[in-house]
Length: 147
Image 1 (spheres, one colour):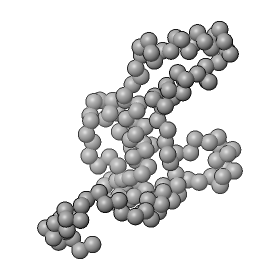
Image 2 (tube, rainbow, N blue to C red; image 1 turned 135 degrees about the vertical axis):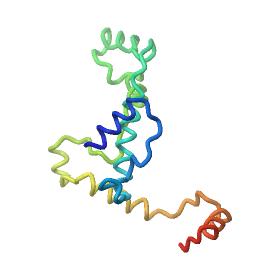
Image 3 (tube, helix red, strand yellow; image 1 turned 60 degrees about the vertical axis):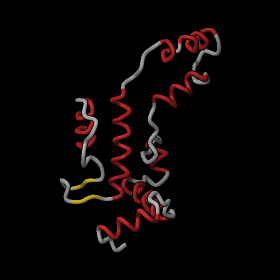
């Protein structure tokens, strides 16, 4: 929780580069893949929050409001609502958005366990080869990396 509050305050103050803001544990004494994933989701939420809400004729959706008032009586089925939700809301991939009852019925998985399962899934995937074999070999030779 303190990481979220601190990172939010830093973002709202205008910082756009914050080192060691993800994956760090125990006052930087360690880090973990699980913490990287959870913190990445936290930082994505903060990034969306500090972006703010754009208010203009398009985002206000007066046509959608008028159609809801004079038509079906709700706006949930309008294209404008769907587009707004996709544009303005951050949908976390790890955080559980179920009701407490549904979460409990699913076994009440804790965030760390969900992150651990995602880490295993990611690490089980084949290497995507982001670095060419030539560059990889040069780096390993230059820095004596034996992996």
